[in-house]
Length: 280
Image (cartoon, rainbow, N blue to C red):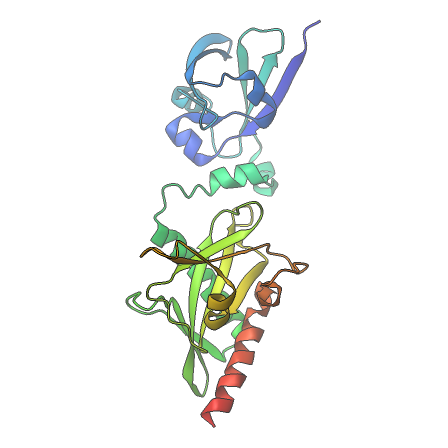
């Protein structure tokens, strides 16, 4: 008896444009471990497509997408006979309203928000902008945010409170992936000058939400220097590294500095209260 395996893959704009398709998770074990040409059945005809094993993608589908007038969120169904034979691809058109209401899983999100072509500066700017927006929105007109023209002192954002002419300085360290479910951020030892008005915000950009994670790190640079791990100590590339889970239930040495992102402004206001004591 033939055992037929079926799985679907919703296509995204980049796949349509470049004519490739990611293979669904359920079908991965039926594909080879090396790059090679594979026979498929497409629209009732046999066709060879190139398979890239490193990225789990098949290429050569430009005409296939054009013929079906594919748009993002349409579906391609994979049908595989476990007893052997060619893999069958079937195209399914989705209703436009159904597309608008559909959600995506984590793997699809990582493909849609593909950062491989973005520069480090562009990625950093995205997260810096999100943090600045948080401060402005929750600051309710009492806080303003400025960006330095040049990144010299590692300062990304300058925050001023209305009526207080002593700013708070923030360095934003962003990550677009987690290592073993932990946020890892690093600051070079050379040029790092901790100060009581200088803070580090560590944020993870969640591809599924297209926003920063619900939790972030807000830590004074003085404490960051004390608590972080110094790696490559004897080189010019010495680095202060922080590793932590982003959760309110974390009990590690950074637990006091992990906050909900909507509480960032409350913490900043607390720091301004401390600063105002010194200014009196």
